[in-house]
Structures are given as structure tokens and as C-alpha cells.
Amino acid sequence: MCQVNTDPMKSQSAYLEVVIPPDIIYEDTSGDMMVPEGSSAKLICKARGFPPPKVTWRREDGGEIILRSSTTGHKSKVSIVEGETLILSKVTRSEMGVYMCIASNGVPPTVSKRLMLHVHFHPQIQVPNQLVGAPQGTDVTLACSVEASPKPINYWTRNSGN
Image (cartoon, rainbow, N blue to C red; front, side, top):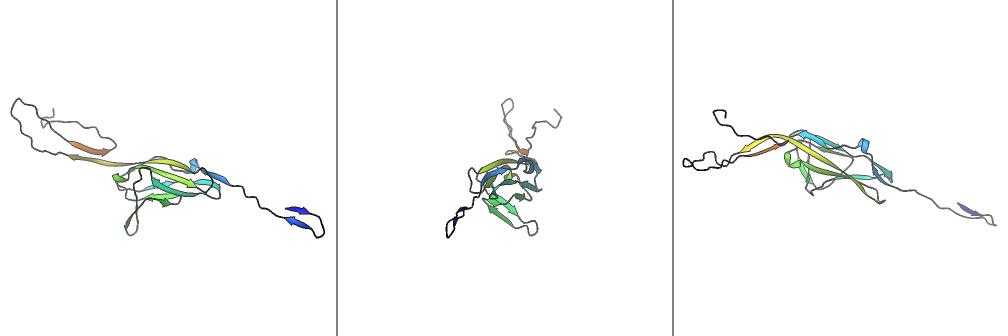
């Protein structure tokens, strides 16, 4: 307050508010995560600043985040989720990827942290041609595609064990 002691006295008041840009609290924030397919993943992102920052989640690839209700099983797809905690239930391999935690309070700069979600799943094998014939003495190509996480070790054997 500024005051001039005249008759009558005059004064002027002002209010100072110090703003603080957002900062992610790394010790309270999740890191990269590995979960088995079908289980849940709880991602946490805490931020500080003034005014208190708003935390949002999005996928780095721009894909949709799949939210499933634990009680009804209802599924919804959204591009952004608000809040410090992101719970992904019954995760599938399609949900594997980088999730971005973004903290913003209107004071630049906005800050973010990348979290990689690895989803482990059993190998799935696809054999396009299960019976391949070829004349004796010619070359033949056998194809087998395997999808798994973590990356599988693939090898071929014969019934004889060789």
C-alpha cells in the first residue's frame, strides 16, 4: 500500500502474486513400466507450481487411450485424460507405447515426461502354408511369423530333433 498523509489521506493498494512455472516431481512420478497383457497399469505424474498445475495424459503417437470401467467393463476411447493418475485396466498389446504426462498452469513453459509402457504377451505363431510340396533337389522356403513381447528367440527343428 502506498499512502500520502494529506488531509484527507490518500492511499493506493496493489496485490503482488508470484507465479511459478510447472515442474514435474520426478521422485513421485512413474517411470517406464512393464506389465503382462490382461493386467492393469497405474501411471502417476505429480507436478508443482503456482497456480497448481493441471496434469494431462496423451499418447505420444497421437493414438487413443482406452479406458475400461473396472465395475461395468464399459470401454471408452479418448485422446486426453486429465488428472495425476492414469489407470489402464486389462491392457492389450495395442496399448504398448509411450505415454506423455503434461503439466501446465498457464505460466510458460509447459513441461512433460515420457513413460514407456511395455506389454508382455505370449508368443503367437502364424504359418501361412502348413503343407509345402517341392520336387526333390529343389529349394523351398518355409515361412513362420511370430509375435511376442519381449522379443522371442525363434528356431526350427524337425520331428527327428535335428
